[in-house]
Amino acid sequence: MKLVALAVFLATAYAPVQALWPQPQQIETGSSTLRLAPSFQITVAGHGVPGDLLAAAGRTKQYLFGDRLERLVVGRGAVDAPKFPKAKALQRLTLSLEKGASFSSITSEAQKLPEDRDEAYHLVIPADGSGATITANSTLGLYRGLTTFSQLWYEHDNTVYTVSAPVTIQDAPAYPYRGLMLDTARNYFPVADIKRTLDAMSWVKINQFHWHIVDSQSFPLEVPGFTDLAAKGAYSSSQVYSLSDVRDIVSYAGARGIDVMVEIDTPGHTAIISQAHPEYVACAQATPWATYANEPPAGQLRFADSKVTSYIAELFTAVTAMFPSKLFSTGGDELNTNCYSIDQPTQDSLKASGRTLEQALDVFTQETHKALEVKGKTPVVWEEMVLDHNITLSKDTRVLVWISSANVKAVAEKGFKLIHAASDYFYLDCGGGGWVGDFPTGNSWCDPFKTWQHSYSFDPVANLTAEESKLVQGGQHLLWTEQSGPQNLDSIVWPRAASSAELFWSGAGGNISAALPRLHDVSYRFRQRGVNAISLQPEWCALRPNACDIDA
Image (cartoon, rainbow, N blue to C red; front, top):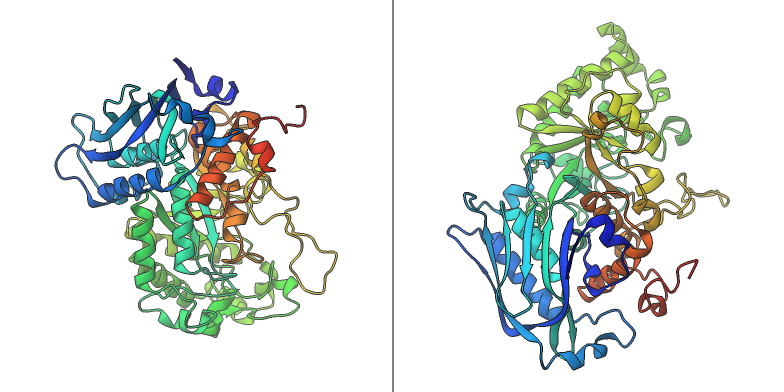
């Protein structure tokens, strides 16, 4: 039995306990076989235990006995069967808070600002069958410990077991924000698909669902007081997210330790609002679309008009009531100034106010962000709002760096907290070929395909000073859905998105050769749980760790 720090552990030869994903910060393991007793129970010590923690314990038990995943070794679980008769049986796992801590719901703790979340935990599994324990200072930490516990076990011949007892883990995330963005505007995703994705996110400790819910193509969100936007902007009456749907998704996510950050992208990416309010949108459906927008259809808010500013501020206020997250993304990317130069109402508004377009954008941003801040929300913007425009943002604004990882330094130098979302590492849609019609030689703008190995190799603090590095909140994978829908959701996201989950939990510098066998395990376990993650290699390779490395 040995205690190893993360970097050393990742460099060791493959062992069964390395199925853990993300890799814990510190882990001590043995080589004894330990069975789960058929009567195994998970209990929570203390008073006032929240219902979502009890539900999580119930789900964990279902996974333990329902995964039926055999170890990924030649011979699978049969190689372990001779050890079963003499193996001790674990009867119980007890969850408890550290002295002085008190229970809150998983949901309420997950919905705090990222830097205020406490996800640390301590897991102990003795080899002699005496009770296993998870302790933490927070309910959220206990939940993360449950997730780790569920990854330690395999099944063969109706026996659930581990071959790595005893186990001691001390763990906490390197970064507080570990996200996944899903665009549900280019193509619609039913609630069931979103929930399945949330489940998968929770299994690798992703804690932030960035919901890019509306865009120029559709407005599927039914906002109380603004229902005309979805009535006229959704693809159909059946392709909407009602208030009940949103509450369902937010609740489902929260119970799995995931916060839901909604994005209402403005002032660009808003062509669809013209269906309900044509007077608020410049260049609506203008052609050729490439002159006025990055993709069809063209159309942007007439933000120089004070009535439009008031309308969006009121819309934001209404949406804040639907999403309890402290974070609210207002977008701000890809603003096309050509559109406004030919839009007479915008030119008239600028002339009447005596402002430039940039000054009008500043007023619009300040007023709409003020509406959020009054409701206790922290604005999140795309990088252009910091790097391309001269506007006033509160210093607590979070910035998503997406155009290129090379732009991280410039954002950090301006003193803003930042979230890695670089297209050159984390865009899941890259490499899918061009989707614009009548253009047979077209490619995706962010070619090539971004492999899990590429994103796993990312350095979150590259070229940053020690002080600038403190501004990094974490990062996320992103799926823009011009060429994706429910049909390929699982396969395009998983297990690639798990690579950033580990990067931002365990920290940078992980060994790719050591990670691959563990990521195989993620894919296989996901499939056992109903998420159709793709295979990373032929199964022959998955059963023989590192045998298919390029230098093997």
